Image: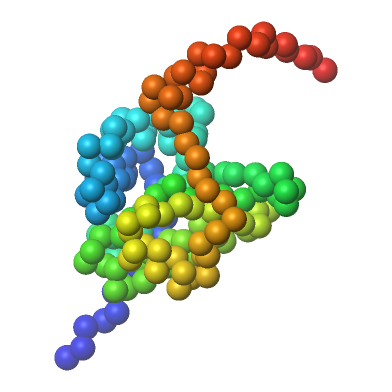
Length: 174
C-alpha cells in the first residue's frame, strides 16, 4: 500500500511562531559553527517582526501540519534598477523535509510575493563554508555574484562608526 504524498503548506509567520523561528536560526548556526554568534532571542523576533515597526517578514512551511522550515526576509531597494526587491536573511528547512522541496517552495513563495509587490529581484548571502546551500541556490538560478563583496560593521566597529558622526541633523518640513 502506498502512502499519500505529504501536504506542504506555506503561510505567513505569526508571533506564536517566534520560538520555532528562533530554533531554526539555532539550526542554521549549528550548521555553520556559529552558535556562539547567535545573540537574538524569540522575544527579539516578536518585537522586530511582529511589532508596530516590522523589520522583517517570515513564511512558514508545514508538512502535514508539522513545522518543516521557514524563510525570513525584508524589503530592499535597488537604486541602479530603480525598483524594489527583497533580501532573504535566513532560509531553513528541517533535515527530515529537505527531500520534499520545501526550501525551493519557500524561496519561490518569497520571490512571488516580492513580484506581486512590484519587486524585480531577490538577494541573499551564503556562508562561505556552506557548500550545500551554495549548490542549492545555484540549482534555482540564484547565482553567486563575482562583482560584489559584502562588507559589514558589527558590535564595537558599528558603535565606533555611529559615535564618530557629529553632523547635525537638519529636519525639513514640506
